Picture 1 (cartoon, protein in one colour):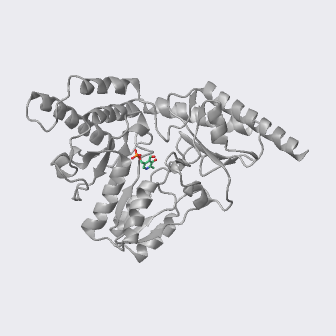
Picture 2: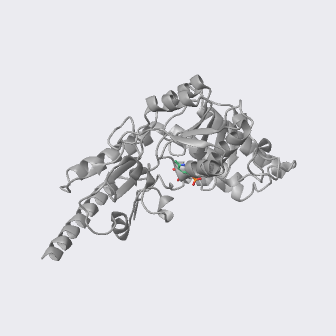
Picture 3: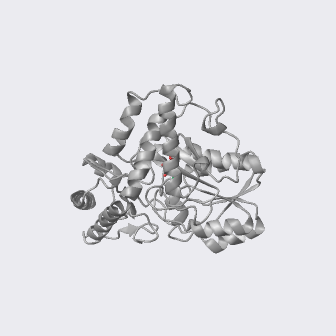
Length: 386
Ligand code: PLP
């Protein structure tokens, strides 16, 4: 079996499992308890918060643990709209649903109007248009993702941060796909909110964090306890937090070697496919760019494949890839990202996303399998013409 869908989720690193184990066994206390059992876990959570804060160049008081990026995005967007009585949001059509849906809810309820920033054919944000939108509505909530989860494009959040500062706008960025993969030093440029989800960087599922710039005080979204300095009620997911911090630490410790490895895998997949004889392969977004795209994602269209879904065919060979995002596979049809940037309908697009655990042999096997599927597909089409 080959797993090539690491933008959906990643395998847990064995070192992370080791870091989690004590909190599954002996260190089971409730971090809010004042006795020894609670203190052991509280100490780990404090250390985890410090680790994350240090890696991002912020203070520990600005990091709050939550259940993942979906919750973090909802919190940042809904509670900043409420707190500041914001009436205008600027976003893009290719944001994750965990951003679009809360914004659309506020639009439906009459709280805000949404403007969508223009994108070019490759899915890049038109910064001039963003400035034009800010000129018309300076006190906006800007929500633009750092890297897109389907096509891998990286957006210049530093440039957006400067514009937000100039216009006194609030800037939330969905960094779910970049935390641990692209270094972000918030000492260099400010953002108001950013988010992370541990399972995207070899940590456990169901745990993440939100960075809330200390100039903001948001109301909690989940009420019921004084945990996380009153920002998020509910006993902390100590097991998850232990894993999250360890996973992020490893991502930074091994940053260069991981980046080099995923870059090699991506370039190998691209060049092998280009030399495979399969015609008309299209690389979506900035997939072929090394500077404007994640080294871990490549999104490809195969217009020549006539029958069935390539994602399903690859699955029958034990190869796990994705058509768009895993979440959009849950049922609502094609990719809203691809349809926002492409004119042609119904082009099947396939997302290959790598991690440090993939190998060059796996890439070769993937390309050979696609070539086999193409050949079989072509034979079937010829037979049906006869
Ligand atoms: N935002 C982006 C860009 C993502 O890729 C994902 C994960 O699919 C999410 C948000 C949601 O993350 P989670 O499901 O971990 O809450």
